[in-house]
Length: 379
Image (tube, rainbow, N blue to C red; front, side):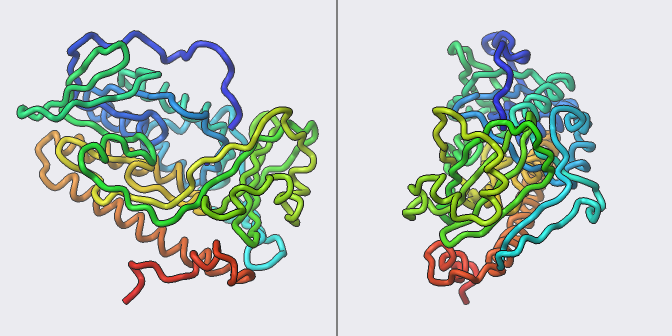
């Protein structure tokens, strides 16, 4: 799971392509995964339409691990981190005990991470995709018709115009709209939800850390945002009473998060919002003329802090695989699927180990669910 972008026209909002225009690839979804896929494809010489639906609430701030430098450098997009974002100099957590531990960025071989202005970061990646040669279209939902016998898709865009393409990259997020419409199945592992609110600016806020604090029915996260504001998020399961608890009431019971948030004014008239935060994946990340990337392919628990990093990796890898497949490599997509599966396996192992480190509330449903063996682990 971001302060609001400045009002005004979207600098990427251009006229729709000519009716019947042809592209090698249409990328549905222009978040980090979609933009990364588009950049990889145009840098390989492919013609690409990157379509951003722009639906739903604006994303809020997120942390980007330092290792993302490597992926952004591979995309030629590392300048996106030079303005508008805050350094993250340490990650702190009260996990397994009430004491607050810290992991400092000085120990990371890649340096410090970032507290992102997500709207700005996404826009910077789209601008880079456009500058590299992708056609970027905002406010547009991709609606593909069934793939034709000649292997091409007909895709309806805004204004009822259509374009044709040889391949579609599904980067539509957890909906995986193209993949599921093509027969892929979403496998959801839990019911975690994020209840989040952006607090107002504190004039003397100098915090550069992200902070996690476990609680009896879930866990809290807070981090500074550009402009002196602060993101406050409560994670629990959607079916538990804790998902409906008044946010200030739950916040008052915390030991560390409350004190960090107290310096920031509660926004007048703003209500906390909910967003999905569950772990999920597709049973197949590619099919007849399509490939999934980002949360459409595999969505992680935000506790991992790997969401955007994984989006960039799968977007870049999907773009490279699609380019190779269009060039005649029959194994490119299978190789991509294996790389996504390997990332998911590592994530699940680390996720289980991290939740196992918190044993203070073994009788609470949230923690019982995360300590119980999953079907994959049961002999």
